[in-house]
Length: 260
Image (cartoon, rainbow, N blue to C red; front, side):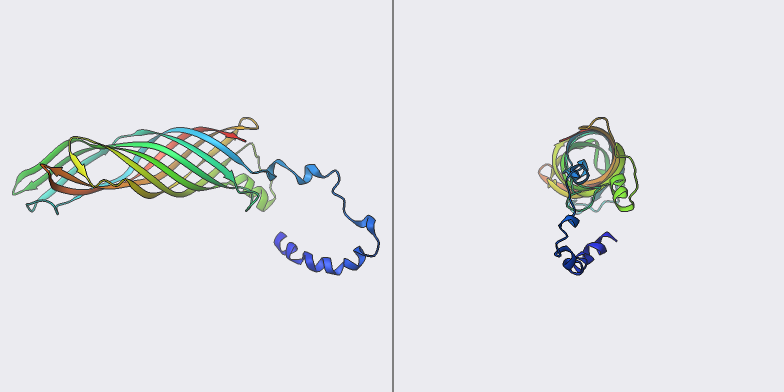
């Protein structure tokens, strides 16, 4: 509705131009004394830095092998993997787009460190015998993830769209976007090759933010994201097996933000 009125304003201006130019100077609107109404805290760019800590757990994982490097045709490749729970640290910068789009939308840039340790029990069966076996730590994956995220803050958005009066001292939010992981590996007792260094994935999450002062707030959020890599197992300088790791993880974070 407000956009339709903006579209019709020029036509109303032309219609009443004769009246405005007829010498009725006192009819011109005055903005004197209305600074508080026009310039409000909501009109300022919303910017913050936050630090968050949390735990991550893998809820869906795939570790698959193929036999393209073996000199034998295996009867079966049996594997059982375990992804250990680890912690996560995240630093993020948020810039509100209230003055560029509509209230309640922010652009976040996050930098996060998280680690994943994968334990593997593997057997390659050929001719009724065990041709290759391993039971130990496969690798520890250290990841530094960079993410540009779009965040929706529901209460400011609903206050703007529906003209409600929901509180601004706290509120829920959702975010999502692409994630670029820079992966560093600590290999276990196997020699691994062709590990992926840069992996493009995604992240989705949401939480609640509570303001404890004009500049400080606390957050609690849960998120889900993806990471993956290919690898080749070597033995005696020869490629034995190739495989890939692909997992989805959930993460719970608590953090603090400073608004400036």
